Length: 430
Image 1 (tube, one colour):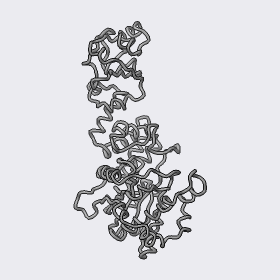
Image 2 (cartoon, rainbow, N blue to C red):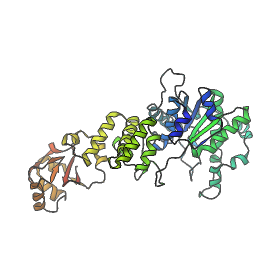
Image 3 (cartoon, helix red, strand yellow):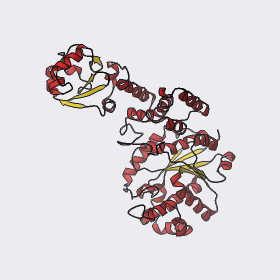
Image 4 (cartoon, rainbow, N blue to C red):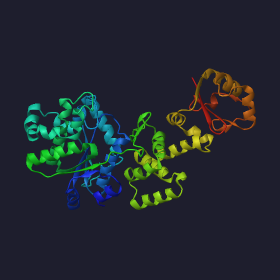
């Protein structure tokens, strides 16, 4: 596989330094991509860069994932309008370990292959670097004029951001430039990958290497991923879509991909999966024949959910989706864990009732009219139950005065009531 060709048809190249393609054809190249360890999980905004490293390794080259322990303590001004919080070393180390575990699903860190991936942390080589040494060995090679010309610096100086630019952030491009120099000298790293907003920082590194030891290095960036409507990719009303199931359940993760627009699905399936060109073209053709079947979205959601979580999580997410939109059984409902249950029924009306009432045994009609106002009157509930229009936990309610007990509770605290086909209510026993 040819790395540049692979990225090109996937729409994953924004800018590339001349000579990059020739270098990659000539030898096994080591490249690095920086990841900011501000949290103990990656989110899907990181995924394009991670997929670049994955394709890079699959094409026979050696990827380095650099966790920016030192730069994470400062914050990159690119694309940001305010300084970020500075993290302590213990938090950074914890975040690094969690990120490595996640990256292990995309990259091979464990084998004996000459191109096995490595995780490096710039804190390791920056922590003992004194300010005087840094000023002498790095600062003297790059002029302030050169640094000022960068777009990320210009934006902050021209009043687009309220607070201007601190000296700390101004030095960020020198720190990132030094990372490239250090990895070039210690690991023969000749290529830096990143998002298009990193181009200024990356070229500073290339310039620093040229001026320090005359070395020639290269750069390749991917476009920043957006939605077709111009909105920010990966952000929902509840915030980022995380790769860690503690922050975004596999069900919600799956739903995110399932709900992208047709136009976005055509781009995302190239960027976020390892499916071949032929397979993707076949899926797009099939999708265009019958867009309402959402073939592309379903396949995209499947591939990414299995890659990030597991096949079992994917199957559970599909089954959970069927509960709300399909003809799922009460058994499927009972198999849901509490987090998924709450994710599936997020946004449906909820009622809290006393658990002791249910433990004592209570008639459905009393529970669902007096304790939880799901039905406006007992007469209306009776009529609906007789017509087969009321379900409890996905099973038709046999009689309007059926007794409800603790045995009916899901996870010992929930009842799912369905009125008609589409109206769901979650009753929470406390």
